[in-house]
Image 1 (tube, rainbow, N blue to C red):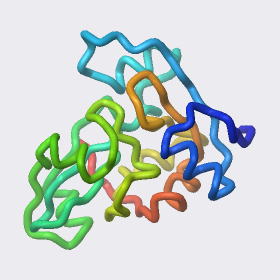
Image 2: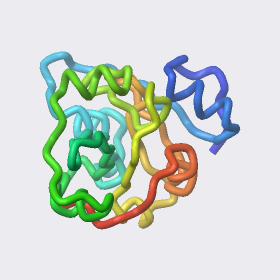
Image 3: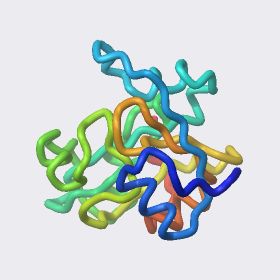
Image 4: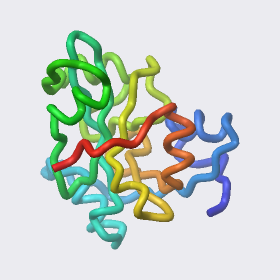
Length: 162
């Protein structure tokens, strides 16, 4: 995978470039009528959906946390709460997620967010040489290694998908 320093110019690509993390940009044409953004990306890019991960925000005992899970599954809120040492987690309000990350829903990248949040990646990401996450806007994904995703987000792996 080649290092790309002139991708879409999103906060995610800027953060990766500044950190010296190699990634591959994958733009595609987003259909505004589609609401299952990750599955749309997998289809448009011709890759197996299990390699595409969605970025979700949750409120865990009053703290905003990021859960990254395959688009083929769902975020297990109990497992996410346990992974961050909280008693309970609920999905964050979409407006709060947008305000705190600086991204729009459907284009929230785990990389380059306005505020560094506790981040947990589903352990299935470790099964792949590379994974795809949102590049910071609808119609744009970034491919990188799971290890680089962990490093750039200061995340940890845990079983948080169902």
